[in-house]
Image (cartoon, rainbow, N blue to C red; front, top):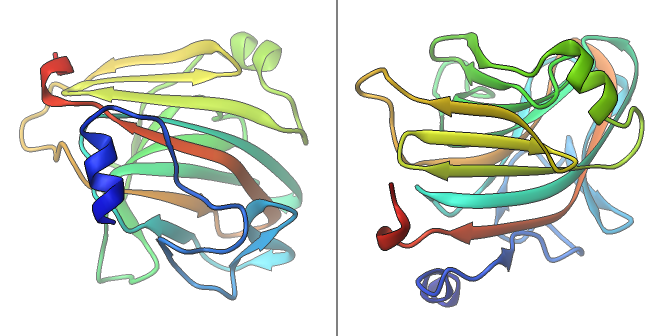
Length: 202
């Protein structure tokens, strides 16, 4: 991790996933695995509860880029990417914090998982319909600078949100989610992170 932290000082875009195994990540390996150069979570046989795969490095201000593909047959077919988040003790499978939502009509939206438990901002349904590719690979970008959060889906800005509530953490973990109560599989690839240096903060 030392080399990773040093490179961040130069605001380099660095890979979070080596394409081969889950080095640097932490989660249930019965749920999460690597297939065909992608991180894959969940099962078409069913997912009884939310599950998260967390990157071990804490980050504050950053640009995260990734591609996702979500497929499913039954239930609330959904996943997401947590950021500025923490694992909680009860229930131990959950995380709290911001989530870039994916699926079930909420792709490109910003949700507050296990904290305020509400959608903070989301694109209009007609924009999402035009922008997201169903059952195919989609590109996402999460840009976080201070209290300002922007989400982009396939190059289109879907969220431009400024946090106004006091006491909300401005650093934490990044994690991948597959939602419970569904028969679905989510895959992620080309995950890169650029940690923004202090002089670029707004």
